[in-house]
Length: 569
Image 1 (cartoon, helix red, strand yellow):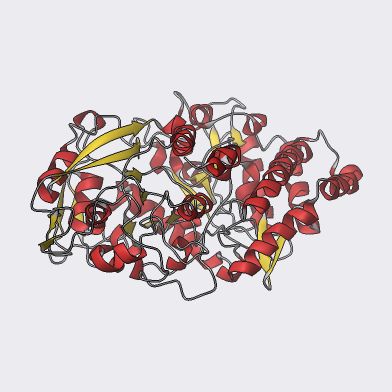
Image 2 (cartoon, rainbow, N blue to C red):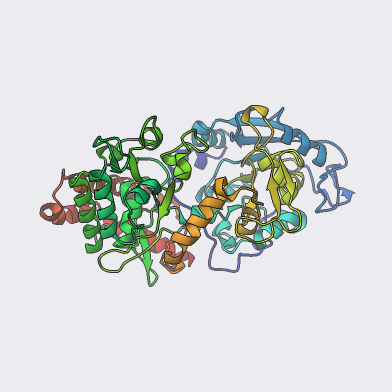
């Protein structure tokens, strides 16, 4: 292993904190852009389609699912996505039968993925293919420049029949290319409509109905509704046990401010660089703006009047679920989250998961009304990388190319055709009302070890995701989330030009940015909580808060983001 890799190990272990993306300003959007060699230094030789190269491997024609005429073995490191054994997994065995490629697995537990990856790369003990390890573009470019990760441009052009189709279906395909014009990983893309609009607020509709309350549309109306939940005994048990509003930490947009602040100023918490946004091409941040202060003042009022549960700032999902779906009378009025399962149990005995509905994006006192929006959140990096250890990189490429076939994707995600899923029939409708593509018959159980889930690269376009045939819309989670998002949030998403896209940083920028971001993120979250619960006085201590942000080099932090943005866009 090169000495430079070892020197950079400490930096690399934290680079995963940095959102990485986007190619250069050159025309790097086609699969054939760049000049990187596809074979790699340690390749045993080229193998052409329908013929034998110097390696003796006979490949089938590109686009065929069967990769080679003889059994070939690949060594693959995979970030564990399933509970069962990859060797005995049904999809693994089916895929080997179809491709004639046998895999020797090195399975890495989810909680040690970053550590294992960096140690493997530093020691030189890594396999032919690295899969589902979420290697960001900064790391890809670094190891690509050292020849450890192979550029895939020519491999895609020659062997990537399905990969080229997949890239063509992605609007922001340039996000997968490094600054040198190379693409080092097969793309993964999940165009999840409701995930891109996931800063939601859920409210217990039976309480609205019982108290004859309208769905709130403004921050003032929400205040009145929460106050009624607290004071008018909506669960009817004669006890003052109702909790109007509660959230959680480290869950899916369950922090108290994620939803509410969008009524005062656009608040992007999906971006790795929290609270940042673009204004006419300039990177800025909301945490020092008067509108942000006004939003905190509103939340302080809710907390001060007992409308926000104190546990919101310390509890996690399981504790929130005890409030939303515990035994006995319902006690939770509203909670922020990307889905109802942060505070309820899907298909739970109480059925409460179906009784919470979304509150639309709220209008603030100055007419501001935004919904959270993440147009880049479906872009996933580093799910399939071919290393210089691969003796037959063209075989690895052909094997990986198969993952973009729709029938392969359906089997990997759902299981056996005819048992777990089937193709849709004429007249069947998908989630969005358009003709369906497939119907899920029965979800496989983890202990059956049928599927790979999302262990491999895949391109799940909106057309594919929304093409799920719906037979029981009232209880179909994807159907519910899509329509809640479409009706209550999509009308209020900001223009895409306001969203800071993924950025790519130099080693020097990454090193400087890490300390700045960690310090600022921790301080901002700390002060949001203190201002809301009253440990810090918003009026009396606001100027000191702003001065502390300046002392923490907020201006330099934004300057680095601006430099990275200007060099890419």
